[in-house]
Amino acid sequence: MRVPGLFRNSVLMLGFVFLYAPIVSMIFFSFNNSRLVTVWDAVNSPTLKWYVVLFKNEAILGAAWLSIKIAALSASGAVVLGTLAGLSLARFGKFRGRALLSVMITAPLVMPEVITGLSMLLLFVALEQLTGWPEGRGILTIIFAHITFSMAYVTVVVQSRLASFDRSLEEVALDLGARPVTVFWRITLPIIFPAVLSGWLLAFTLSWDDVVISQFLSGPGSTTLPMIVYSKVRLGVSPDINALASVMVLIVALCVVLSTYYIKRIEQRRVAEALMVRSEEL
Amino acid sequence: MGGVCLFILAVVQSSGPLTVNGRRIVIAWPFFWLLLFFIIPFLIVFKISFSEARLAMPPVAPLFEWVSSTKNFVLTLSFNNYLFLFSDALYINTFFYSIKVAAVSTFWCLLLGYPMAYAISRADPVRRNLYLMLIMLPFWTSFLLRVYAWVGLLKTDGLINNFLLNLRLIDEPLTLLYTDFAVYVGIVYSYLPFMILPLYSNLEKHDLSLLEAADDLGAHPITAFFKITLPLSISGIVAGSLLVFIPAVGEFVIPSLLGRSDQLMIGTVLTNEFFSNRDWPVASAVAIALLLFLLVPIKIFQYYQDRETEAAL
Picture 1: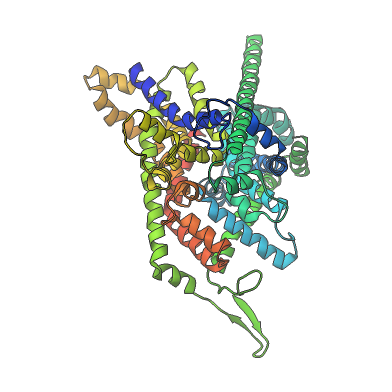
Picture 2 (picture 1 turned 90 degrees about the vertical axis):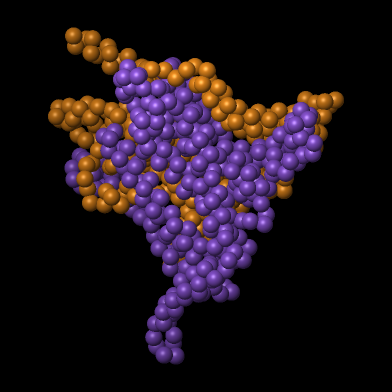
């Protein structure tokens, strides 16, 4: 039984208008000549002047570069730890500490950011008192915090991928005498690679986007892009932020579309290879 | 990526074959990381919530102190921070207001998200991935900027007011920004994907022959929906709602950009206590109180999350 098309389409239309109208309006007004963001200056628009303003703003460019570095490093750390955690939860059956590990994976997914930020900061302050490390707060403490809250997302993605693929492949390899490490590199990792990649992208975005946790953990010289944006937009709308948003939407849209197609292609190739192997067997 | 792979290689190979020992090492990395950076911080927050504030850096008096005159360790436990929270109407108000805002937003999120998840799960399979990508795409763009976009829409001279004025539906601009309504919109907008995705993954698994059977037996589609689809999707509803509700209670950015200035939310109060008043013990007590309240929803969420993964295994 299918849902009537009219109902389906109107629900989706409504939902997508709600999701995209704000983004589209932001992009639209980034080409507006007027300083008043929401009043369209029909005579002198469209103009690229806010993009020029944006790309001349060295504070924003510097912060963007810093945010990219922080996001890449934390995503890489989160992918390693998250994959190991996903492997443990999906493959190792019952082990001591499993219940605690699964709590520590689920809780960060929903934990309000202010609590995470505050508690991480107090940890680093206590660590510094005890051991002298880290000296003050900065890029390093932000990265540690970002790894911690984003690895949970990687774990969930990797774990569900591991749960959905056929375990007998790994077992066959083990039976044939492959060492578990070899099995991981030759079989498990290639199969879960799309999940690992999307976990990395997810962790990158979470870090790139974060303002609350960074605010608690940043020190002098570690102002990230979201922190600058936040302090600007708290004072009201400003047209160069619209331009920044448009640039970001464009980049993200490109990345998402490309990576989706890339991941799909890997999967299709794998399915095709599997089919070929099977037909050779027959 | 290369560095990451080398790191995994080092970890995995140092353990030799994945014997029991090898497994232990794989488990140990994430386990101790989270223990150090997730669990221990809470214990520290808990400890500091019983301390007295002082004028120093860090601005917290130690719980244990060596008193040289009496040659003793002295333990100073102070419940003042909690007493302060419960005696001041401001904090209790803020707390209930945050719960109300989170609950109302979750309700609207469900009301909008359920039909969307349902429609996507019943669309033809080729289209489904496109729809899902369209749901996820805004999530990948900056959360902060998406909330900010609503400032431009909701302002007194913003797009929505201009639009309604031009249509002559209203005579003077409505006050939309800096209201409860704006916060609801902001939360529903930002958290909608978190509601839709668990619902979708639940609805997509339903056995449609149940509905066909109901149809054959003469049930009206609406009856069939309420008697079959809705009860089967309860776990998706719970998971999605908690994924919205729990973080929304402590939300900081959305109320500070869109919300009222005379009624703060608990996340803002915590941040203000910490940064503006530099009262770390009270901020910690606020965090602990919030955490205790959220413990039950987090536990329920974990129960459903575990059930989902176990069903998949």
